[in-house]
Length: 304
Image (cartoon, rainbow, N blue to C red; front, top):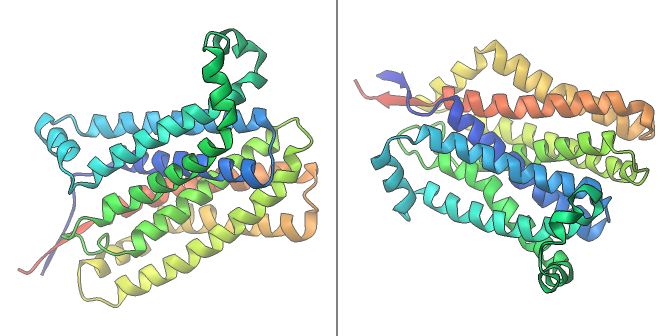
């Protein structure tokens, strides 16, 4: 039996998957916070504009990888391709995000001349349906985040990818990176109300990291006890120091320890800001490493 690493999807696709999950989750979490918790509108506008930028940059990396015209045309016009559905989800996301963020930009005096060029009836309509845009946008963000995992799991020839655990792992990881990014924004925000959101985000990210660890355990348990390419992929990751130290320890265990300390002992004071910045940065780096190494671990199994 022969095992061969895939050589089609590299760091460009990993970057697209990371930014797609991050952008979708950032929008979804921001919109939910706005709907149910209330949030500093300026911080919220930064979060939504950042999430749009993440999706734009990620899409550029995807298109750069799809420079082969025939491959791109087939993927973008074939309803059985997850890239086809991903384009639909992302367009739905962009429309919702732009409609949602325009009323929030009124908190930026520098942008008022641009905002005033939009017809007043349109602005009034967007303001009136702002919460509806938040609701549809959160659904769009979730679809974009989970799509990044579905795209990879649809490869039947790579048994390590072809499992329902992978989309679940990617969506939980995506929401963890989204919560970490919002935690960074709330830490740097000068608005006192942002620190009320910090506690919620810290708790959310801790729960997401614990969930991610549970899913990882189930995922590797599935892979290690099968005499197939999935086992070879799992062993490859277990023998990778960057995956173990960079993703598992630095990207999950250390941030979880910092956030647990913050939840139970620090009282969410501003003195703990530097620790939160470190935890958030580690979660973001870990999320990117996860996607890099899952792609690296894609192995074809040949019966000879």
